[in-house]
Length: 169
Length: 169
DNA sequence: AAGAGATACCTCGAACACGAGGTATGGGTC
DNA sequence: GACCCATACCTCGTGTTCGAGGTATCTCTT
Image (cartoon, rainbow over all chains, first blue to last red; front, top):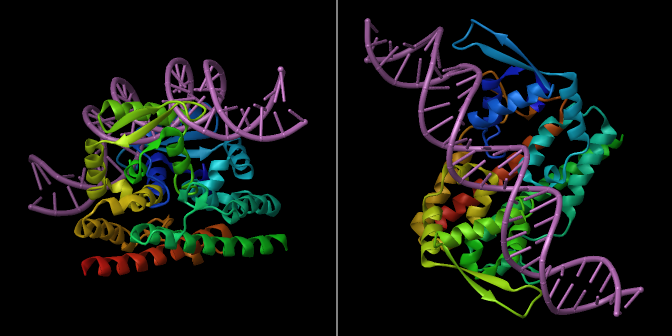
């Protein structure tokens, strides 16, 4: 829906755009995409205009309907918790948060993410004791994992704080 | 399988440990975990020892069988492409790569990831032209997304290079 | 002129995941 | 003594996702 809100597209191109989000979003399989398009069309979330001729096969240009736009905004404004806590989902949310044309609502979403990120957390535990990188002297891989996660987290927290200040202005 | 290779656990604890990987791995639902355990038990990948009495409900302590260990090693040694390219999967792979007790094989896996990360790539395209952060003057969210992704990527590439040098020694 | 490969859509069965529901017991509180 | 919560396991229906297969056309190479 985000990509369609950017511009009307045909299915194949949509699939390519999602695939380009490599590393953060899994590519969508054919068998997932086309049935989903049908479902969304039936639900009135998008319109399909067949554009015969020009290319190999007739393209079905998909346009987000007003109902689809509303649904996108609803999901951007009040995303499920998974969209805040899961890397992949948060990534897609961020990619299209611009469409939520309301600084206060955007700020509220960013604040939810900031709250989540600043919660004390650890990936591994020994009973109730959170384990840190130093607790894995024999596992350079987990130490690396901590290093990468910390760097990401720090960068994101700094960015979120900046954004929240500039959105408040 | 990785957590069970660390130590035998009961299902509930397993679920908690996966849930602790917050932000990188989605929590597993009850309805997913227990049928999966059954399937793996039937497949001979793990053994179940019922430990009655001590706690509220009898715990089923799960132990990875030799076949399960072999399967884990197989998957660590030759992971599907998704485990290299998808953040979530790569994260879990890294968390248990120590179990693959062979520096050469570990190095090969890290090299696959490094190759993937150093490929020129972009999340968004205008036709064939890759779009960079500067191409989104009106979208601070996508600029942030680039900033975070770049920081993560840089940190990880640096770590991978270090690891590969130290593994080669 | 043939064939490979990209474009573009589609279907179907099998596998998988989830949420809602259920059972049962131990520990703590009011 | 009643109640709630955490622990610990389980099932089932519904919905999702995938992969393998299929169709057809256009373009580029050999």
